[in-house]
Amino acid sequence: MAIGERIRFMRNLRGMTQKWLGQAVGFPQKTADIRMAQYESGTRTPKEDLVKALANVLEVSPLALSVPDIDSDLGFIHTLFAIEDIHGARAEKQGDEVHIVFDGSKRTTDVSVFKMLSAWAEQAEKFRNGEISKEQYDRWRYTFPAEDTTQIWGKVPSQEFSDALVKALKKNIKNV
Image (cartoon, rainbow, N blue to C red; front, top):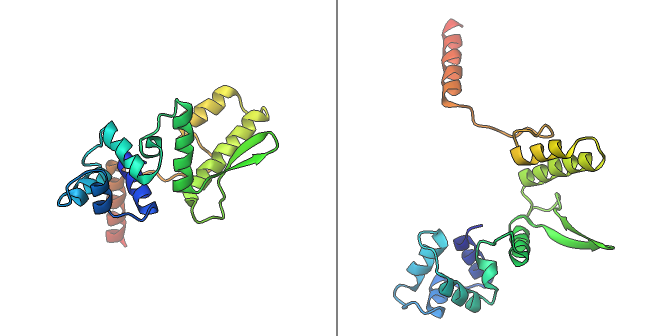
């Protein structure tokens, strides 16, 4: 989720209008809503000082608005928080383990995302059980969905293929 989408999400979560938020961070009343709309749509990207001001007004960490750096611990955890917001994931502790759970029965989880996660879980289990090698597992992950055989992922046919099918269908219709 891009920074503009995060700003909009947090603003809506707090029940604020674009105009109110814009004025709260110091934009003139006349242009506050326009400026916020530009940031939320991605037309403009807020500088670090504005991100901090927005985070302060929204009562969130600046990391909750920024596109997280998953190479840092804080960036990683904020990425997981965004995944919770978007896909309905949740963290659960079971003994000494912490699990990220995607509940397929919940409407917040997109069906295709749940299927992809299920495919990942199947491949990870095959790797843990020794059914596939680390190289096979990595190939599956890094070429996904091309190497996936657990699901059928729709691909758009090339224009040439599409044109050939249309031509063949038209020819068959004329011969009938």
